[in-house]
Each structure stands twice: as structure tokens, then as C-alpha cells.
Length: 169
Image 1: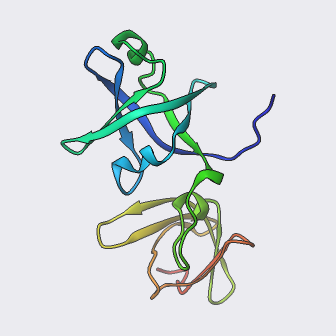
Image 2 (image 1 turned 120 degrees about the vertical axis):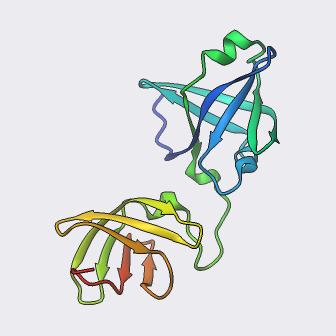
């Protein structure tokens, strides 16, 4: 059976902890324990996929540690190292107006106020002060702060972002 749901990479398994199957997880979320909001994960590595359920988890010294159902010893946990953790996009909580998940912004076309296509969002980065759109296109790589001073409109339906950004910036 083919799974047509859109899965979004949310982190990866970076190691094991103890002898009872606990995993150390690197989360690509604002808060490490946000991954615990999703009781079911898809793990992927080298083209292989595995569906798992989260039994329990905790943050210890800023690090997310997770116990998965059926992973009960160090050897089974070690076998999962390097797997990417994915969550079904449909399981994400709704956003407030003016808030967006990075996964929804990646792939959007960025057009400046003069109607020139600057490129597509291929990634975002966090600077501490604000997020930055990383754009690639015909005019090269551009980094645009994701703040209201430069971002005019985010049209999720048409997958476009309007930016007050010149070609020579």
C-alpha cells in the first residue's frame, strides 16, 4: 500500500542512551520536546521506512531522550541511529494568522514588488533575531529576513511570497 501523505523531516536519531532502548534525538523544532506532541513517527534511512510509536520521552540537559514502543534494548536502539524522524504534515497543529511552518514555506516562489521572480525558498535559517529565507534562482542565492519590513504577503494557496527586495541586494 502506498502512503501518499506528506511527511516532514523533524529531526534524526543521533545515538543511544542506557541499556533499555532509549534514544538521543536531535529535533529540528523550536522546542526539543515538541516532537513528543506526535505519538507516531516515520523513520527513514537509505530508502527504508519504519513506522514507530513513541512510548515516552523527556528533555535532559537540553537533549531529547525518547523510548519507542518495542525498542527495549541497546542493540535495537543502536540499529536506529542515523534514521530521519518524519511526521505527517496533516498532524501539525493549526497556525495562527501570520504564522507559518518552515515546511510550508520551502518550495514557495518569491517575487519582488516589481514582479520579478527572485527564486524559490530552498531552506530557512534561524539567526536568533528572526528567521531568514534562503532563496535560489536565476539571479543567484539570496538571503531575505522573514520580517514584515521585507515580506509583504505569503500566499499559501498559490505558494508565493511577495518581498520588498531588489535584484542587487
